[in-house]
Length: 466
Image 1 (cartoon, rainbow, N blue to C red):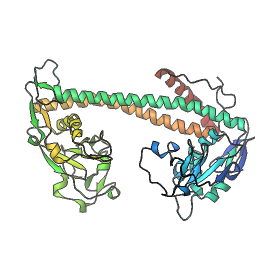
Image 2: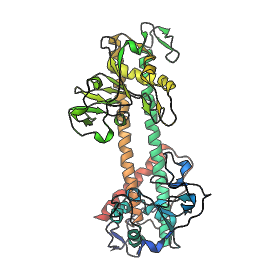
Image 3: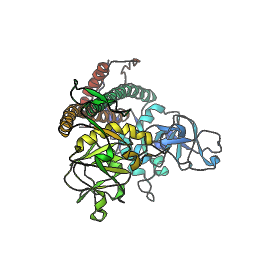
Image 4: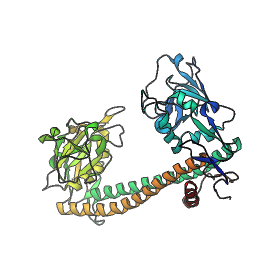
Protein backbone atom coordinates (compact mmCIF):
# COMPACT_ATOMS: atom_id res chain seq x y z
CA UNK A 1 0.00 0.00 0.00
CA UNK A 2 1.34 3.40 -1.03
CA UNK A 3 2.24 5.66 1.89
CA UNK A 4 0.48 8.99 2.20
CA UNK A 5 2.84 11.92 1.54
CA UNK A 6 2.51 15.58 0.61
CA UNK A 7 1.99 16.96 -2.91
CA UNK A 8 5.14 17.88 -4.87
CA UNK A 9 4.18 21.55 -5.40
CA UNK A 10 2.06 24.02 -3.43
CA UNK A 11 0.81 27.60 -3.83
CA UNK A 12 -0.60 30.13 -1.41
CA UNK A 13 -4.39 30.21 -1.32
CA UNK A 14 -4.52 33.65 0.35
CA UNK A 15 -7.28 32.18 2.56
CA UNK A 16 -6.16 32.29 6.18
CA UNK A 17 -7.81 29.07 7.41
CA UNK A 18 -6.76 27.15 4.29
CA UNK A 19 -3.11 28.09 3.97
CA UNK A 20 -1.12 26.62 1.08
CA UNK A 21 -2.86 24.20 -1.32
CA UNK A 22 -1.70 21.89 -4.14
CA UNK A 23 -0.58 23.94 -7.13
CA UNK A 24 -3.24 22.58 -9.50
CA UNK A 25 -6.22 23.09 -7.13
CA UNK A 26 -8.60 26.01 -7.74
CA UNK A 27 -9.94 28.55 -5.26
CA UNK A 28 -13.55 29.56 -5.95
CA UNK A 29 -16.28 31.52 -4.25
CA UNK A 30 -18.71 29.35 -2.30
CA UNK A 31 -21.69 30.57 -4.36
CA UNK A 32 -20.18 29.02 -7.51
CA UNK A 33 -20.34 25.46 -6.19
CA UNK A 34 -23.03 25.69 -3.45
CA UNK A 35 -26.15 27.45 -4.74
CA UNK A 36 -28.73 28.74 -2.26
CA UNK A 37 -32.22 27.35 -2.82
CA UNK A 38 -35.50 28.12 -1.05
CA UNK A 39 -38.28 25.71 -1.95
CA UNK A 40 -41.44 25.77 0.16
CA UNK A 41 -45.01 24.38 0.16
CA UNK A 42 -44.06 20.76 0.88
CA UNK A 43 -46.04 20.28 4.13
CA UNK A 44 -46.24 16.48 3.80
CA UNK A 45 -42.47 15.95 3.89
CA UNK A 46 -40.98 14.70 7.20
CA UNK A 47 -39.65 17.27 9.66
CA UNK A 48 -35.86 17.43 9.85
CA UNK A 49 -33.42 18.60 12.53
CA UNK A 50 -29.97 20.08 11.81
CA UNK A 51 -27.57 18.53 14.32
CA UNK A 52 -23.87 19.18 14.71
CA UNK A 53 -22.99 15.55 15.34
CA UNK A 54 -25.31 13.62 13.00
CA UNK A 55 -25.98 16.12 10.21
CA UNK A 56 -29.51 16.82 8.97
CA UNK A 57 -31.74 13.94 10.06
CA UNK A 58 -35.45 13.35 10.82
CA UNK A 59 -36.57 14.86 14.10
CA UNK A 60 -37.91 11.42 15.01
CA UNK A 61 -34.32 10.12 15.09
CA UNK A 62 -32.97 12.98 17.16
CA UNK A 63 -32.71 12.16 20.86
CA UNK A 64 -33.10 15.67 22.23
CA UNK A 65 -36.38 17.56 22.25
CA UNK A 66 -36.49 20.11 19.46
CA UNK A 67 -39.02 22.86 18.86
CA UNK A 68 -40.86 23.00 15.55
CA UNK A 69 -39.94 26.25 13.83
CA UNK A 70 -43.47 26.91 12.60
CA UNK A 71 -46.93 25.37 12.87
CA UNK A 72 -47.49 26.41 9.26
CA UNK A 73 -45.55 23.67 7.51
CA UNK A 74 -46.00 25.37 4.10
CA UNK A 75 -43.42 27.96 5.20
CA UNK A 76 -40.73 25.37 5.95
CA UNK A 77 -37.93 24.86 3.45
CA UNK A 78 -37.44 21.68 1.47
CA UNK A 79 -34.10 19.93 1.93
CA UNK A 80 -33.05 17.22 -0.50
CA UNK A 81 -30.68 14.42 0.39
CA UNK A 82 -27.15 15.64 -0.39
CA UNK A 83 -27.88 19.32 0.28
CA UNK A 84 -25.96 21.32 2.88
CA UNK A 85 -27.65 23.37 5.58
CA UNK A 86 -26.40 26.46 7.41
CA UNK A 87 -28.12 26.34 10.80
CA UNK A 88 -28.13 28.79 13.69
CA UNK A 89 -25.24 26.89 15.28
CA UNK A 90 -23.16 26.21 12.17
CA UNK A 91 -20.56 28.74 13.30
CA UNK A 92 -19.78 26.36 16.18
CA UNK A 93 -19.73 23.00 14.42
CA UNK A 94 -19.60 23.58 10.67
CA UNK A 95 -22.18 23.28 7.92
CA UNK A 96 -24.47 20.26 8.18
CA UNK A 97 -24.99 17.63 5.48
CA UNK A 98 -28.49 16.32 4.70
CA UNK A 99 -28.75 12.55 4.89
CA UNK A 100 -32.52 12.63 4.28
CA UNK A 101 -35.11 14.61 2.36
CA UNK A 102 -37.62 16.65 4.34
CA UNK A 103 -38.53 20.14 5.55
CA UNK A 104 -36.73 22.37 7.98
CA UNK A 105 -36.89 25.81 9.63
CA UNK A 106 -37.16 28.77 7.22
CA UNK A 107 -34.42 30.44 9.31
CA UNK A 108 -31.89 28.01 7.83
CA UNK A 109 -30.03 28.41 4.52
CA UNK A 110 -30.22 25.47 2.09
CA UNK A 111 -27.26 24.94 -0.25
CA UNK A 112 -27.50 22.77 -3.36
CA UNK A 113 -24.15 21.34 -4.56
CA UNK A 114 -23.36 22.01 -8.21
CA UNK A 115 -21.96 19.65 -10.85
CA UNK A 116 -18.31 20.21 -9.84
CA UNK A 117 -18.97 19.01 -6.30
CA UNK A 118 -18.37 15.52 -4.93
CA UNK A 119 -20.72 15.52 -1.94
CA UNK A 120 -18.63 13.38 0.39
CA UNK A 121 -15.53 15.56 -0.04
CA UNK A 122 -17.36 18.74 0.93
CA UNK A 123 -19.18 16.90 3.72
CA UNK A 124 -15.77 16.42 5.33
CA UNK A 125 -14.41 19.86 4.38
CA UNK A 126 -17.36 21.87 5.76
CA UNK A 127 -17.15 20.07 9.13
CA UNK A 128 -13.36 20.11 9.42
CA UNK A 129 -11.65 21.94 12.27
CA UNK A 130 -9.77 24.22 9.86
CA UNK A 131 -12.96 25.31 8.10
CA UNK A 132 -14.85 25.89 11.35
CA UNK A 133 -12.04 28.20 12.50
CA UNK A 134 -12.64 30.30 9.38
CA UNK A 135 -16.39 30.54 10.00
CA UNK A 136 -15.78 33.04 12.81
CA UNK A 137 -15.21 35.66 10.09
CA UNK A 138 -18.67 35.04 8.63
CA UNK A 139 -20.93 35.64 11.65
CA UNK A 140 -23.40 38.50 11.54
CA UNK A 141 -22.61 41.79 13.27
CA UNK A 142 -26.10 42.09 14.77
CA UNK A 143 -26.22 38.58 16.21
CA UNK A 144 -22.49 38.20 16.81
CA UNK A 145 -21.52 34.62 17.46
CA UNK A 146 -24.99 33.21 16.77
CA UNK A 147 -25.48 32.97 13.02
CA UNK A 148 -23.57 32.96 9.74
CA UNK A 149 -24.11 35.88 7.38
CA UNK A 150 -25.27 34.19 4.16
CA UNK A 151 -23.96 36.97 1.92
CA UNK A 152 -20.53 36.71 3.53
CA UNK A 153 -20.62 32.94 3.10
CA UNK A 154 -21.46 33.20 -0.61
CA UNK A 155 -18.45 35.46 -1.20
CA UNK A 156 -16.09 33.38 0.95
CA UNK A 157 -13.55 31.12 -0.76
CA UNK A 158 -13.41 27.32 -0.86
CA UNK A 159 -10.88 24.93 -2.40
CA UNK A 160 -11.96 23.09 -5.54
CA UNK A 161 -9.78 20.06 -6.27
CA UNK A 162 -10.35 18.06 -9.49
CA UNK A 163 -13.38 15.78 -9.09
CA UNK A 164 -11.27 12.63 -9.18
CA UNK A 165 -9.21 13.97 -6.26
CA UNK A 166 -12.33 14.93 -4.33
CA UNK A 167 -13.44 11.31 -4.77
CA UNK A 168 -10.04 9.95 -3.71
CA UNK A 169 -9.95 12.13 -0.57
CA UNK A 170 -13.49 11.11 0.41
CA UNK A 171 -12.72 7.40 -0.12
CA UNK A 172 -9.49 7.71 1.87
CA UNK A 173 -11.28 9.40 4.80
CA UNK A 174 -14.21 6.97 4.68
CA UNK A 175 -11.75 4.10 5.03
CA UNK A 176 -9.51 5.65 7.66
CA UNK A 177 -12.38 6.95 9.79
CA UNK A 178 -14.19 3.62 9.66
CA UNK A 179 -11.06 2.05 11.14
CA UNK A 180 -10.60 4.79 13.72
CA UNK A 181 -14.26 4.78 14.75
CA UNK A 182 -14.26 1.03 15.22
CA UNK A 183 -11.13 1.33 17.33
CA UNK A 184 -12.83 4.02 19.44
CA UNK A 185 -15.96 1.89 19.79
CA UNK A 186 -13.98 -1.11 21.00
CA UNK A 187 -12.07 1.02 23.51
CA UNK A 188 -15.36 2.43 24.84
CA UNK A 189 -16.76 -1.09 25.13
CA UNK A 190 -13.68 -2.02 27.15
CA UNK A 191 -14.26 0.94 29.50
CA UNK A 192 -17.87 -0.18 29.92
CA UNK A 193 -16.75 -3.71 30.81
CA UNK A 194 -14.21 -2.38 33.32
CA UNK A 195 -16.87 -0.22 34.99
CA UNK A 196 -19.15 -3.26 35.16
CA UNK A 197 -16.30 -5.20 36.76
CA UNK A 198 -15.86 -2.42 39.34
CA UNK A 199 -19.59 -2.44 40.09
CA UNK A 200 -19.48 -6.22 40.55
CA UNK A 201 -16.59 -5.91 43.02
CA UNK A 202 -18.54 -3.33 45.05
CA UNK A 203 -21.73 -5.41 44.95
CA UNK A 204 -19.97 -8.57 46.09
CA UNK A 205 -18.07 -6.83 48.90
CA UNK A 206 -21.01 -4.92 50.45
CA UNK A 207 -23.49 -7.79 50.21
CA UNK A 208 -21.33 -10.91 50.80
CA UNK A 209 -18.21 -9.59 52.56
CA UNK A 210 -14.60 -10.53 51.95
CA UNK A 211 -14.52 -14.03 53.50
CA UNK A 212 -15.62 -16.60 50.92
CA UNK A 213 -16.00 -19.20 53.70
CA UNK A 214 -18.24 -17.10 55.94
CA UNK A 215 -21.50 -18.72 57.04
CA UNK A 216 -24.47 -17.09 55.35
CA UNK A 217 -28.08 -16.38 56.26
CA UNK A 218 -31.14 -15.12 54.46
CA UNK A 219 -31.27 -11.33 54.77
CA UNK A 220 -35.06 -11.29 54.43
CA UNK A 221 -34.66 -8.70 51.64
CA UNK A 222 -35.29 -10.03 48.14
CA UNK A 223 -32.77 -7.87 46.27
CA UNK A 224 -30.08 -8.41 48.93
CA UNK A 225 -30.29 -12.19 49.15
CA UNK A 226 -27.97 -14.00 51.55
CA UNK A 227 -25.53 -12.08 53.76
CA UNK A 228 -22.85 -13.22 56.26
CA UNK A 229 -24.44 -14.65 59.39
CA UNK A 230 -22.97 -12.02 61.75
CA UNK A 231 -24.19 -9.03 59.67
CA UNK A 232 -27.34 -7.05 60.37
CA UNK A 233 -30.07 -5.98 57.98
CA UNK A 234 -31.39 -2.58 58.92
CA UNK A 235 -33.38 0.34 57.52
CA UNK A 236 -31.40 3.33 56.33
CA UNK A 237 -33.27 5.54 58.77
CA UNK A 238 -31.60 3.65 61.62
CA UNK A 239 -28.05 4.32 60.42
CA UNK A 240 -28.17 7.85 58.98
CA UNK A 241 -29.99 11.15 58.97
CA UNK A 242 -31.61 12.71 55.89
CA UNK A 243 -31.52 16.23 54.47
CA UNK A 244 -33.48 17.35 51.42
CA UNK A 245 -31.48 19.71 49.19
CA UNK A 246 -33.14 23.09 48.66
CA UNK A 247 -30.33 25.63 48.22
CA UNK A 248 -31.38 28.18 45.61
CA UNK A 249 -28.11 28.66 43.72
CA UNK A 250 -28.25 27.98 39.98
CA UNK A 251 -25.69 26.62 37.52
CA UNK A 252 -24.82 30.10 36.24
CA UNK A 253 -24.07 31.28 39.81
CA UNK A 254 -21.20 28.83 40.34
CA UNK A 255 -17.74 30.29 40.98
CA UNK A 256 -14.23 28.88 40.46
CA UNK A 257 -13.23 29.78 44.03
CA UNK A 258 -14.94 30.64 47.29
CA UNK A 259 -15.62 29.63 50.89
CA UNK A 260 -18.47 27.18 50.27
CA UNK A 261 -18.38 24.20 47.91
CA UNK A 262 -21.40 24.25 45.59
CA UNK A 263 -22.99 20.80 45.36
CA UNK A 264 -25.11 21.58 42.33
CA UNK A 265 -27.03 18.68 40.80
CA UNK A 266 -25.66 19.25 37.28
CA UNK A 267 -22.11 18.78 38.59
CA UNK A 268 -22.42 16.13 41.30
CA UNK A 269 -24.12 13.50 39.14
CA UNK A 270 -20.95 13.39 36.99
CA UNK A 271 -18.58 12.38 39.81
CA UNK A 272 -18.31 9.62 42.42
CA UNK A 273 -16.43 11.74 44.94
CA UNK A 274 -16.26 15.44 45.74
CA UNK A 275 -12.60 16.04 46.52
CA UNK A 276 -10.06 18.80 45.86
CA UNK A 277 -10.40 18.34 42.10
CA UNK A 278 -14.03 19.48 42.34
CA UNK A 279 -13.77 23.27 41.93
CA UNK A 280 -17.27 24.79 42.12
CA UNK A 281 -18.21 27.34 44.77
CA UNK A 282 -20.95 29.84 45.66
CA UNK A 283 -21.09 33.19 47.40
CA UNK A 284 -21.47 33.36 51.18
CA UNK A 285 -25.04 34.64 50.81
CA UNK A 286 -26.20 31.13 49.91
CA UNK A 287 -25.12 29.68 53.27
CA UNK A 288 -27.83 27.81 55.21
CA UNK A 289 -27.22 25.76 58.36
CA UNK A 290 -29.77 23.20 57.16
CA UNK A 291 -27.89 22.62 53.87
CA UNK A 292 -24.36 22.11 55.20
CA UNK A 293 -22.46 19.07 53.90
CA UNK A 294 -19.45 17.78 55.85
CA UNK A 295 -16.68 15.24 55.37
CA UNK A 296 -18.07 11.69 55.33
CA UNK A 297 -21.55 12.64 54.11
CA UNK A 298 -23.16 10.91 51.12
CA UNK A 299 -25.17 12.74 48.45
CA UNK A 300 -27.88 10.89 46.52
CA UNK A 301 -29.21 12.22 43.19
CA UNK A 302 -33.02 12.17 43.47
CA UNK A 303 -33.95 13.57 40.04
CA UNK A 304 -32.60 12.58 36.64
CA UNK A 305 -33.37 12.63 32.94
CA UNK A 306 -32.46 8.92 32.80
CA UNK A 307 -33.46 6.12 35.17
CA UNK A 308 -29.84 4.89 35.14
CA UNK A 309 -28.54 8.11 36.75
CA UNK A 310 -31.30 8.14 39.36
CA UNK A 311 -29.89 7.33 42.80
CA UNK A 312 -26.29 8.05 41.79
CA UNK A 313 -24.28 8.53 44.99
CA UNK A 314 -21.36 10.83 45.75
CA UNK A 315 -18.99 10.76 48.73
CA UNK A 316 -18.06 14.14 50.22
CA UNK A 317 -14.30 13.86 50.75
CA UNK A 318 -13.41 17.42 51.79
CA UNK A 319 -12.82 19.20 55.09
CA UNK A 320 -14.34 22.53 54.00
CA UNK A 321 -18.10 23.08 54.05
CA UNK A 322 -20.32 22.15 51.13
CA UNK A 323 -23.83 23.43 50.45
CA UNK A 324 -26.44 21.01 49.11
CA UNK A 325 -28.29 22.02 45.94
CA UNK A 326 -31.76 20.91 44.90
CA UNK A 327 -32.71 17.53 43.36
CA UNK A 328 -30.44 15.75 45.88
CA UNK A 329 -30.78 14.09 49.28
CA UNK A 330 -28.03 14.04 51.88
CA UNK A 331 -27.29 10.92 53.95
CA UNK A 332 -25.43 11.76 57.16
CA UNK A 333 -24.05 8.51 58.63
CA UNK A 334 -24.27 7.82 62.37
CA UNK A 335 -20.54 7.50 62.91
CA UNK A 336 -20.70 4.84 65.62
CA UNK A 337 -22.83 2.56 63.40
CA UNK A 338 -21.78 3.04 59.78
CA UNK A 339 -18.68 4.25 57.97
CA UNK A 340 -19.48 7.02 55.47
CA UNK A 341 -17.58 5.44 52.60
CA UNK A 342 -19.11 2.05 53.29
CA UNK A 343 -22.54 3.71 53.20
CA UNK A 344 -21.67 5.31 49.87
CA UNK A 345 -20.56 2.01 48.36
CA UNK A 346 -23.65 0.31 49.77
CA UNK A 347 -25.82 3.00 48.17
CA UNK A 348 -24.42 2.12 44.75
CA UNK A 349 -26.00 -1.30 45.23
CA UNK A 350 -29.36 -0.29 46.73
CA UNK A 351 -29.73 2.49 44.09
CA UNK A 352 -31.21 -0.15 41.78
CA UNK A 353 -33.95 -0.75 44.32
CA UNK A 354 -34.59 3.00 44.54
CA UNK A 355 -35.28 3.15 40.82
CA UNK A 356 -38.42 1.09 41.39
CA UNK A 357 -39.91 4.18 43.03
CA UNK A 358 -39.15 6.35 39.98
CA UNK A 359 -42.00 8.53 38.79
CA UNK A 360 -42.14 10.74 35.72
CA UNK A 361 -41.78 10.40 31.96
CA UNK A 362 -38.99 12.69 30.70
CA UNK A 363 -37.68 13.46 34.19
CA UNK A 364 -37.56 10.75 36.84
CA UNK A 365 -37.52 11.22 40.59
CA UNK A 366 -38.06 9.61 43.97
CA UNK A 367 -38.63 11.32 47.31
CA UNK A 368 -37.09 11.21 50.75
CA UNK A 369 -39.81 8.91 52.11
CA UNK A 370 -38.95 6.33 49.45
CA UNK A 371 -35.33 6.45 50.58
CA UNK A 372 -36.33 5.84 54.20
CA UNK A 373 -37.95 2.51 53.26
CA UNK A 374 -34.68 1.08 51.93
CA UNK A 375 -32.87 -1.62 53.87
CA UNK A 376 -29.14 -2.21 53.77
CA UNK A 377 -26.69 -4.73 55.17
CA UNK A 378 -24.41 -3.52 57.98
CA UNK A 379 -21.30 -5.52 59.06
CA UNK A 380 -19.34 -4.75 62.25
CA UNK A 381 -17.62 -1.34 61.94
CA UNK A 382 -14.10 -2.79 61.67
CA UNK A 383 -15.22 -5.03 58.83
CA UNK A 384 -16.79 -2.04 57.05
CA UNK A 385 -13.40 -0.31 57.04
CA UNK A 386 -11.73 -3.46 55.67
CA UNK A 387 -14.35 -3.68 52.90
CA UNK A 388 -13.80 -0.02 52.00
CA UNK A 389 -10.02 -0.54 51.83
CA UNK A 390 -10.48 -3.61 49.60
CA UNK A 391 -12.90 -1.85 47.23
CA UNK A 392 -10.64 1.19 46.92
CA UNK A 393 -7.56 -0.93 46.22
CA UNK A 394 -9.31 -2.95 43.52
CA UNK A 395 -11.09 0.08 42.07
CA UNK A 396 -7.83 2.01 41.81
CA UNK A 397 -6.36 -0.72 39.62
CA UNK A 398 -9.38 -0.55 37.31
CA UNK A 399 -9.44 3.28 37.35
CA UNK A 400 -5.77 3.37 36.32
CA UNK A 401 -6.56 1.18 33.32
CA UNK A 402 -9.62 3.27 32.42
CA UNK A 403 -7.58 6.47 32.68
CA UNK A 404 -4.98 5.05 30.29
CA UNK A 405 -7.68 4.08 27.79
CA UNK A 406 -9.32 7.51 28.04
CA UNK A 407 -5.98 9.15 27.21
CA UNK A 408 -5.64 6.86 24.19
CA UNK A 409 -9.15 7.86 23.11
CA UNK A 410 -8.37 11.56 23.46
CA UNK A 411 -5.23 11.20 21.35
CA UNK A 412 -7.11 9.16 18.75
CA UNK A 413 -9.82 11.83 18.50
CA UNK A 414 -7.13 14.49 18.05
CA UNK A 415 -5.49 12.42 15.31
CA UNK A 416 -8.87 11.87 13.63
CA UNK A 417 -9.60 15.61 13.62
CA UNK A 418 -6.14 16.44 12.26
CA UNK A 419 -6.31 13.74 9.58
CA UNK A 420 -9.58 15.14 8.19
CA UNK A 421 -8.24 18.70 8.16
CA UNK A 422 -4.98 17.70 6.47
CA UNK A 423 -6.70 15.60 3.80
CA UNK A 424 -9.43 18.05 2.77
CA UNK A 425 -7.04 21.01 2.53
CA UNK A 426 -4.47 19.15 0.44
CA UNK A 427 -1.73 18.97 3.05
CA UNK A 428 -1.44 15.27 2.24
CA UNK A 429 -1.65 13.57 -1.16
CA UNK A 430 -3.94 10.53 -1.21
CA UNK A 431 -3.93 10.05 -4.99
CA UNK A 432 -3.19 6.43 -5.75
CA UNK A 433 -3.78 5.37 -2.14
CA UNK A 434 -5.25 1.89 -2.35
CA UNK A 435 -8.31 1.64 -0.15
CA UNK A 436 -8.86 -2.01 0.79
CA UNK A 437 -12.26 -3.39 1.66
CA UNK A 438 -13.07 -3.24 5.34
CA UNK A 439 -13.73 -6.66 6.84
CA UNK A 440 -17.06 -7.23 8.51
CA UNK A 441 -15.27 -8.30 11.67
CA UNK A 442 -11.69 -7.52 12.60
CA UNK A 443 -9.80 -8.37 15.73
CA UNK A 444 -8.96 -5.66 18.23
CA UNK A 445 -5.27 -6.19 17.43
CA UNK A 446 -5.79 -5.70 13.67
CA UNK A 447 -7.60 -2.42 14.21
CA UNK A 448 -5.03 -1.22 16.75
CA UNK A 449 -2.22 -2.05 14.33
CA UNK A 450 -3.94 -0.04 11.59
CA UNK A 451 -4.29 2.95 13.92
CA UNK A 452 -0.64 2.66 14.90
CA UNK A 453 0.43 2.66 11.23
CA UNK A 454 -1.78 5.66 10.56
CA UNK A 455 -0.21 7.49 13.50
CA UNK A 456 3.22 6.88 11.98
CA UNK A 457 1.95 8.49 8.77
CA UNK A 458 0.75 11.41 10.87
CA UNK A 459 4.32 12.12 11.98
CA UNK A 460 5.15 12.81 8.34
CA UNK A 461 2.17 15.17 8.06
CA UNK A 462 3.61 17.30 10.84
CA UNK A 463 6.47 18.47 8.62
CA UNK A 464 4.16 19.82 5.93
CA UNK A 465 3.16 22.95 7.83
CA UNK A 466 6.70 23.74 8.96
